[in-house]
Amino acid sequence: MITIGKSKQFVSEARQELKKVTWPSKQQTMNSTWIVIAVTALLAAFMGLVDMGLAKIIGMIMR
Image 1: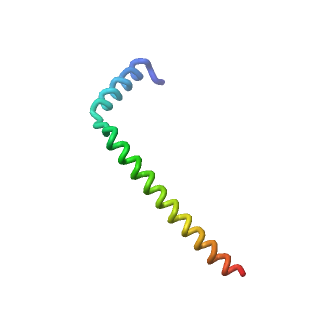
Image 2: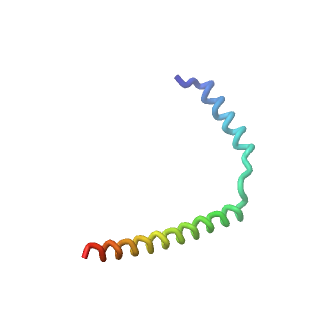
Image 3: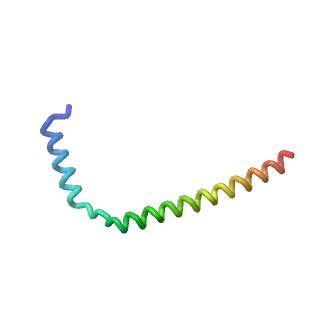
């Protein structure tokens, strides 16, 4: 059973750990976000092309 004392200890330790974190700057976060968006778009386009290609191949086989 969780006690109030253990809950307080957990919150205290969590705060201590969060103080140790090196948070990224706003610019670093924006750059990372744009990279993720670009890679996601490229992979989506690639997967779409592969899907269309495979659909055409299967369509030709099924005729």
